[in-house]
Structure formats: C-alpha cells, structure tokens
Length: 93
Length: 127
Length: 160
Image (cartoon, rainbow over all chains, first blue to last red; front, top):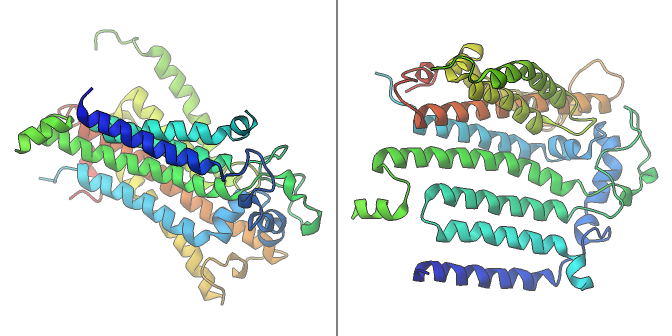
C-alpha cells in the first residue's frame, strides 16, 4: 500500500473513532423524547394546520415558516444551473 | 449489546460517511472523488432523517384533515415523526444534485484541457 | 445505425410512459400541501421525464419538444414567481412572504395562506425542472461527441 493511502486510512480511522465516541451521548433510535423532537417540532406539529391551512407539516414548514430560507435555496439551484451553462457553453461565433 | 442495537442508525451512518471520506481523500480519480462526495452526503441525509424518527410514529401529515381548523391540543405530538429534519434534507438533496452538476462540468473542462481525469497525470503535466 | 429496431422496446416504453411521468409530476407539485410531495420533488419528477426522453431518443428529439430557451426562461421564471408572490405581500401591508395578506376572495385568511404555499411551490417546481434539464443538456453536449451535436444547444437566449 502506498504511504499516502496509508495516511488517508489512518485519518479515516481516527475520524471514525471520534464519531463513535460522540455516539455515546446521542439518543436511541426512535426515542420520542429525544432533544431533536422536543424543542420546536411540537409547535409545528400542533399549530401548522391552524396557521397555514396545510396538513403536510413538511410543506408548511418549508414554504411558510421557513419561506425565506427556501427562496434563497431556490436561488442557489438557479445559480448552479447558470454556472453549469457558463462553464460548458462555447462562444457563439 | 443493547447499546449497539439501540443506536444502529449511527453505526450505519458512520460507516457510510467514512467510505465516502476515504474515497474523497485517497482516490486519485476525480470522478471517484465526486462519487465519494455523494456517498458522504447520503450519510448526512441518513443521519438527519434517522434522528427524527419516533417509534410508532407515522408520516408528518395530519390525519383526517380537510381544510378546516383543528384544535392544537387535540393533536398527539408523539403520533407524528419530527418534520424538521425532513425539511432540511429536502433542500439539501436538491442542492446536492446541483453541486454534483457543477462539479461534473468542471471535470469535463479539466478533461478537455489535460485529456485525463487522473490527479497524478494532471500534476505531471503541470510541472 | 445498422438495425433500426435495436431500441424498439426502450423507445416504445419511454414514449408510453413519458406523459404519465409528466402528469404525475404536475400532480405532485399541485398536491404538495395536503399529501406527500411539494415543489422540489415534483420538479425533479418533471425534469426526469424529459431526461428520460433525452436518454431514449437522443438530444435532438428532445430539443424539438422543449426548446433550450424555454427551459432557461422557466428556470428563471420560477424564482421570479417565488420572489414576486413574496413581494406582492408587501403591497398589502404584510411582511415579506406573509401570504395571508393577499387580497384573494376567500372566506378566511388561512385558506389564502394555503394558496400562497401552492403558488410558491409552483415556482420552485418550475425552477428545479428547468435547472435539472439544463444541467443534463449541458453535460451531455459538452461531454459527448462534438460533431453530432454541433451548435444545437448554443441557440439558447443566453449563449455568450
């Protein structure tokens, strides 16, 4: 094995060790009282039908509560398409 | 044993992420690097979606809903899985496709200039 | 091409299934607020319908169906719809992207908010579809055989 690939493998193993060390603190799979599910998401689940008239919570959060975020997400996609076009088109003779 | 089975989603995401990370830093082919980047991204998506699950929960769409108001107290929160990771990853998937497109465009330009996508060959031609 | 019927099954299947895919994409976009779906997913399905046609029939066939300048127009127009609906809310004394303030003839403001969500999802769907098809055209024409595809995609409105 080349020394550079060995170095890459060691880096990957060290990173994996730190990630596995961090798993100790994470909640179990499917735990409904995990920190990710207790702070803001109950508000979205309970009030989104009242606030936005959209039964799909994902659409309500995506398009209404976080609409500004999605606007610029769309702009990022548009810019990616334009960048692709400017890189690959030939100049018109 | 309980510890390993209860957190199996984290082991899967760590394994996938490390496969992608190794492909990104150790492979010398630029297309393989991009495939590694996509695997890395899929691992992050898996991580986010898996921390939003609840045991016995259903998809985050209100059941039996027409276009009428529902009292917020009558909705059982534990019945629906967490919608926030889905929202974040929904945009991340599409942005990831765009990033892959721009990266492939750059690789096409590199291939036209140097006639290869191997890093070693490009470095040899540069020196 | 030596055998004309080489790709007969693929071409026939794509021709049959393409309208269904496009219709399903429109359904996903419009029904995104009440069922699984939304602008991003529906846009990707719409774009993949055209990409499927381009894979089966070649890029020239698909360019006759949906032209390059139409795709570029749609991908910009989607962002315009999104930002336009957001800015229109400012005119009726609301915040930016506050759809409840739009003066639509509906019973209560919540229904107007639902319509606003559907409107911006149409914008997102158009942008995603246009960008997917545009990236595919660019990659195929630039990476493929240059002689066969000479100058086809360069007719776009934004070509330098």
